[in-house]
Image (tube, rainbow, N blue to C red; front, side, top):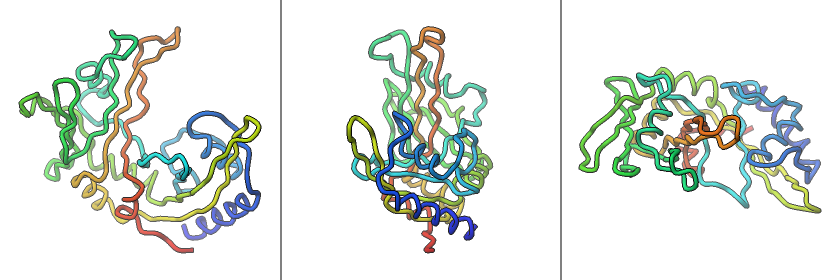
Length: 247
């Protein structure tokens, strides 16, 4: 893997030398899409790391969101469409289309997340080898724990997606109604352990974020749209999960 990191570092340095690079796309994720294009990497939506076993995360410092999405993982719960069920049961009505519900919630193991008249909280259950989403009523009585992720699922995701990480800092500017990026710095990391990942969930440092809405296009209107159930960590806590590899 060290050879792969050195290869990626050399390619990154060549991209950096080019200075400001025009974006090849619009919208969310265009800083990463443009970088992948310059790395001669085709876009894909496979559940594996971006570059030969290394997951690439790109951060625009000037417009930075606090969280990094490590990976997305659908629940292993008792139902096939578990996130849709959660949305339909516990989501809130859309502001415009009141008859349709949405569920946008960031949940952790240390705080009760209030949604309508219920509360959500994570429980890292080492005995059952599961991360369980617990649902409580308004009196904090447990009413449901059907949604969960097996430890085996988490281990597979880590090993195939985020075991190695390249964290890239970039800047963004607008010029003549076009977007440009300057790729400034790259750092490499290796995850400490799966045990550490679970521990960080247990202490509330890694969250699970639900982003479940519905299509608003005419041909799919009202159908559930799941943006992915993301496992997230704040950027300043990244070194709690990873060891930096100096090249």
